[in-house]
Length: 409
Image (cartoon, rainbow, N blue to C red):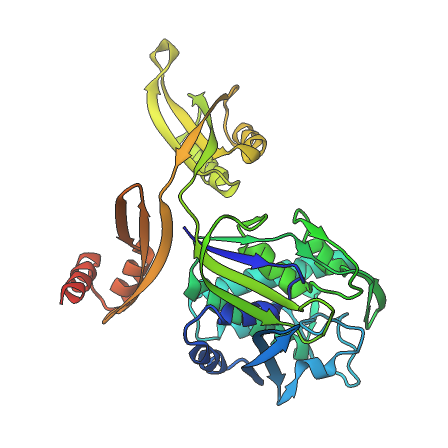
């Protein structure tokens, strides 16, 4: 399984994550050119080599109207991303954007709909945190124009890189958030800053002896959105390693380290929850099944059966991870009319899965590849096939035939 591990031993910030991921790409200069060509208002980005504690890595630099964003920050403020109203203390005033303004900017960028969705979701996590901290609706959260553009560059860049790397799973270590206090426009705040602490709820974090803010809200939101699980580094065979450097210097190398590699196929224990239903319409049952998937079910399916008094009914089967069992049980009772649920436990064997992108004369198509136990299976992504078929006024069958001919030529 293609696995990306993120070492957050020195926290995480948007620019550090971008820089680390860039080192996993064989042609980082091309990615930098692509980001600059997006047309993010007044933004220019660059990557430069730098050294921390004897380790060479990459630093991602964002400039706004030719001025590096770090130049606007006070000495006691973290040296990375702070796009929010209370986090910059500029000597001159700037226009403030709201979340809807950010969405307009993102929607106009020449990137895929998937990447746009990723960017909007990450910004949504940040806005929700700021809304909670300041006690105002999400729609009224303001973002500084300068810090805002800087954060858009970081977030968009991470989302583009994640899309290109396409790991099957992303594991991150517990996050070192730092300790002490941080100065901002509203005064002195504890570390982690309130917005960061809110975003990182349910995520393992720790402090330490370093008196500085190591994890920013943007870094926290990116990790919260993309990371599959927070745990120790798994047993994996690494193929690429990247170091994303921060700007401050500490006694410990100030960097985010990422490792890309393969983890072996494993078995896992799953819980199977089963119930009988004889008084729900097909529409209501379909609605319930959708809610169960949203709640984290691995699989949901139904089978028609004849029940007592020879009445037609349905057996609903839901498979989930054991740690999610209680939540799924609540959702089943909430969205179905069943009076009881049966529980079974078993082992689940899975193939390693990853996604590749193939370039065709009709456009790029993602391909799902599954392997393990002596078998390899490949399947083209239906959504991509449908998109290309519509764009070229072709049937899906014609698109598949074209791809097959090009692969065989």
